[in-house]
Length: 605
Image 1 (cartoon, helix red, strand yellow):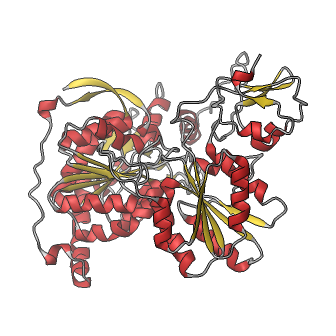
Image 2 (cartoon, helix red, strand yellow; image 1 turned 120 degrees about the vertical axis):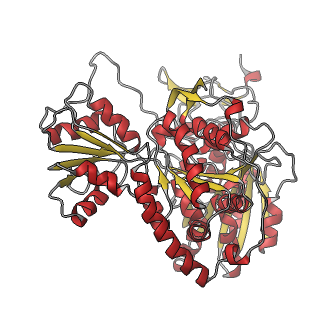
């Protein structure tokens, strides 16, 4: 063993490799992304790593590998599990031959997600065991435990870190290379009675699953990472039940305080019932501190009812812990203080500290999506239109002054929502915006639906040649894979033609006049038509020389600011100025300026 300073996601990946990982697949999504990327960086050639087209494809690929006896892992964030839920529910009945971890990173807050889903519910719903780490070290250790449980019980296992575990850093103990377990898959053995799901198989599997989970409630009661810390005051009648990062916060909050009895739950499903009974013995009251939902709280209420225990359980259900958002050390301390009759703390406020500047989410300077949105906005000025957005950098098109995202639900939904609006409001020009990565992940079926059902809409594909929002991962349109292979690009135009879209035009959005005319021309047609705005992400290309503003020509009309909202154009000393460190030289603002006051650096005095 030796020590390394690792991010939680990196520790999970390293732990999986040390456990014998053969295959890892996934779809990028904060806060899970770095797990797969770390696995790729630490690939000695024995590991297959794949960014799949979406979470469903990723889960099914990993399942196939596990059918062969491989140790596989699939990574995603909590909303990605919705996409993968179809194969997940059936796979729970089929099981695996090797070992398979379904890593789902939850995002309390949420910091970068549409929802605050709690994957612990999905564990109970799918009847799959779930592991919930509290620290970076525990994440490294526990992922190895999860593989062992998966192998022993021949079942997929859910692994549920949250943002603060995923993105926290710590110096941890990791195995030396020679200590790693090397798994050698046997290969796929044909057995239709095992691998082909039929009602009779599902019925028998369901019986087996219920017996297994009943066994696991006992096994998890003895699992070393579920434990009780006895009270320091022997006649104390209060206890705290917690889990995950909230356990870490609880221990910090209790520093210097006579601690009540504490139960740490690392396997929320199947719930360690025998351990809970031991914890509840002799207590009058229990406070449950957890993220996000009252999972432990409701389990303890059930246990109290089942065994007729006169213990009051407090938490989110009773309003003693906030029902939404992240916990913090301060919030946990105040929850405990209220529970134990101590004085609550107020947030520390250093009056000498300056106010932090407010930085609202905004498209990067030089982002081609800004030009795409502006071109459509200008072309549709005065026309009744609706603009349905999607998940990606371009969701930020909703911000003022662009104000070009009227709806955003989930990945790929914009294409179908556009169709629904069009059926009710046929006099409305309906646009659906989708990025190139999202197009491959989840929009193609929507396009086919639109063509088949004779929709009248314009699809706008914002092709910046990467998956920009989550860190520039490759996708089918980039021509490379996570294994470093150079492959044929999947052509979006060809895919659209294959789906039956007859009118498809490609234009550079940074050529504003051409882009505006293209939008006017294409949107005037009936049926399903598509415009591909093609221009690379500004972060991936070498910027042009920054532009400058000619003070003699500038009339301070602020049109460049009021219509584009580019962070590279600022007010300095009362005058409109281009921030040279941010400007990529894209030239969009120079095409918007009515006085030709914005020019290239070569024209500067």
